[in-house]
Image 1 (cartoon, rainbow, N blue to C red):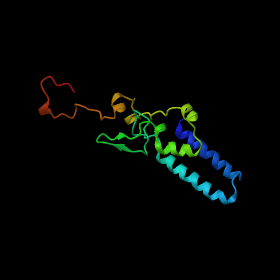
Image 2: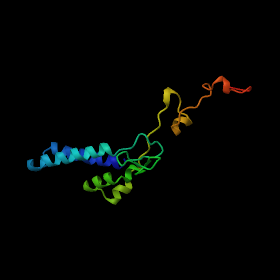
Image 3: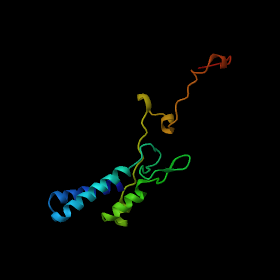
Image 4: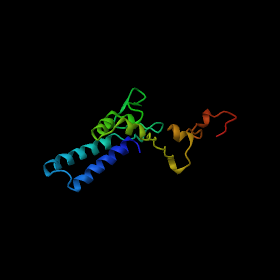
Length: 140
């Protein structure tokens, strides 16, 4: 279980306590709103599916010309760490959490996953080269 899953589990538990009537009615509306706000933050700060080489945080964005991730590992996301702190995260719990894994790249066109899919570059073919540019030993 990574940090995102741990926070989700904690919010689920608070919502279960609300349903069982564990909170006084005067606090019920505020606790429900806090859970909704936490879920919105969790929806924004999740693993970026466009970054397949590291479990980057989508909500923290990118920087630079190459659009590198601001946060390379979802467990290091400052927003999630702040949420987790409010839910009782300790350094021992954080140390025991799993590191998130990057999303698997998906093959294009239903074929087997190849190096081009992993590197996310389009396949280069020579069949589109005009005849005038083909040499005497041309092999398509």
